[in-house]
Image (cartoon, rainbow over the protein chains, first blue to last red):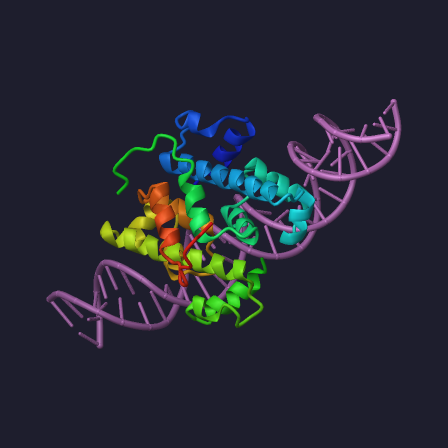
Length: 113
Length: 113
DNA sequence: GGAAAGTATGTCTGATTTGACATATAGTAG
DNA sequence: CTACTATATGTCAAATCAGACATACTTTCC
């Protein structure tokens, strides 16, 4: 749960899945980052598909352009809550969210448990 | 995104899906609450299936028993991030999370988009 | 080049979330 | 009843996150 690891990693601009073991980074921590990035991408897709600018989306969210930019950039200062509620406001259904979460399985080990 | 609505609702101890329109509660807000509750249930299931007490889980999470209790109770002070990273620590895969999220569709309209 | 729209980044301040602690409430065994 | 284990609830200081603002970077168009 160490948030600073995330900072180091993401702000270094690396493709996170690639470096699972670079820092102490446990599997759970790596997964969490990937999930967030998956939601980020999903958010940008949805916004663009609707032909909205970041400013317009920010208005719907009662937030600001800079925060939308950070959301889409996978900035560590953005929480999953914010990403998910934003997606919901953009009309995503829980099923859509589920799909987005699964859309980022890198190693995709079978036998999920 | 008004957090206080969530408080009122959840602390009143109601089955959230039932009251979508009780307060101003937009669809997105209602969905978010239901998603969190779905994750809460999922967390308790996983913990119990592993035969762990809240205290034991708290240790693995480097957190405290009271926080685990709140997580499982769907307390409004618990974020999605915490729920999800806890599930990950318990060994849930992204696919498991996806399943949990879909597991709470109340009206389950077909044709999800 | 300059203007404009869209996006990115850094940084404040206030709000929310967190772990911890105390304490309360079940349930069970002696 | 007492002791013990598991879970729940309230509170608080410290950590994290949010919206806002300034500002920089890109394109595109003139």
